[in-house]
Amino acid sequence: MSDLILAPFQYEFMQRAFIASLVVGTLCSTIGTYVVLRKLAFIGDGIAHASFAGIVIAYLRGLDYYIGAACVAVVTALGIGYVNRRGKVSLDTAIGVLFTGAFALGVFLMSRLPTYNVDLQGFLFGNILAVSRQDLVVTLVLAAIVTVILVLLYRPLLYTSFDPVVAQASGIRVAFVDYMLLVLLALTIVISLEAVGIVLVAALLVTPAATAFQFTRRFTPMLLLSGAIGAFCALAGLYASYYLHAASGATIVLLVTVLFFVGLVVGRRAPRAV
Amino acid sequence: MSEAVRIRDLTVRYDRVVALDRLDLTLESGTAVGIVGPNGSGKSTLLKTVAGLIAPAGGTVEVFGRAPRTLPPGTIAYVPQVEDVDWSFPANVYDVVAMGRFPRLNPLAPFSKHDRAVVDGALAALRLGDLRDRHISQLSGGQQQRTFVARAIAQEPRLLLLDEPTTGVDAATEEALRELVRGLVSQGLPVLMTTHDLDRAEDWFDRLMVVDRRVLAQGDPDTVLASGAYTGIREHSHVHGHARSDEPPVPRP
Image 1 (cartoon, chains in turn cyan, yellow):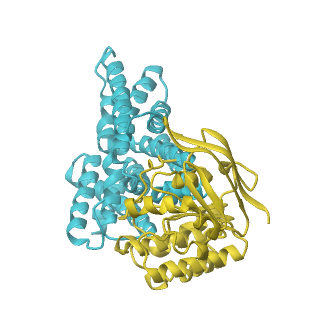
Image 2: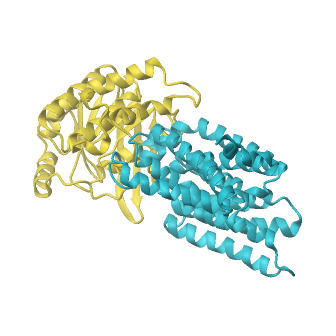
């Protein structure tokens, strides 16, 4: 049994993959609690797709893909927030307009490349086994920054998620808190791209939190349980993909999805569906 | 008595519709002022403007000498007429009341014994002790209202704004709420409150203000109740019943 557990760790790339998946799984599902409670599920998908343009631009310029993806993801996230606040369109419309535009830019730029490029395609579905030592360092540093800010904003995020109007009247800067959440979300998505890819990252943001919601009626337990589900599924999914010779990102997301349906059946404590 | 709220020549518009028209109001510390008027008269708009949720189209609003949005966190506590929250949100009564402490706490400050004591006191004052562990989706309308008033009390504000807090609550709760508000006022807290219930105005308020986009009458409750403005409002109120406000909702801040 111990051989089965330890076997993947004989490879250095697997060690990096386990660390990266643990960080990504935990962070996505933790910040995903706010995504679910604020009904922003579409926004994670949107920012992830928009970041594709940044990846292609970084590739064309010979830059690290993290820089390109982070820049476009953050700008798109802030743009979505701004259009929603200042414009006359709803949030889902703002997301729909901005992320499809940015994603189209990425596809347009990629289509003009002289040769078909497999590396860029890899970002669509993720390849956690390809995480380099440098990628891991960037992931850990960005994850630490996001975590610290999430801790500092814990109370304002909670209050504004529940009752933004009264929170604003009490003196909490709701606009600042909202924009910070969007930036943190964008950075989290960028960290996750190599692990699960653009197409599947939204599942890690939404499904663990939606699963946790089936089991608890209080915020902090939901936050912690969501993080634990994300961490467990990331590790267990990676193990499963190793032995099943399957795509790691897809295996992780499938496991999370199965747990969600288990939660729907077993969980009895949720007051109403999110 | 020091001046808590000073409003001069206040005009508020929703697009082209004038909600408040050159309104003046002064609220001193240790005073409760009641705002009465028909539906759509601008009562809720007035509270939202004092809370800094709506920007005036003209005139000035000062709370303790400053624009509402420049005040330190925790200064104003506002209980809206309709709580537009997600009732499936993972929070029980204690969690919601505890949120009242959040504006006053530094990011890394722990939720101290004092904070817990203030929250417990607010729960007790609103007779919510037995409901503290109940999920918010399982509360009646009156219990929800008491929970949000308790959250405002737990904030220990310097100004309390209540938008029809007695709507939908039973007589015992209304009396408990009245005693609570009068107790806070006697300790020096200024309170601005809208209401449809004119029958016990003299028990609630030090001054009464009749508003229909403009100030129609104001003064001590007995004087205002005896005025023609009161009669007009009362007839209007009876025609329209105690319907909720037809004013536009506040957009997400």
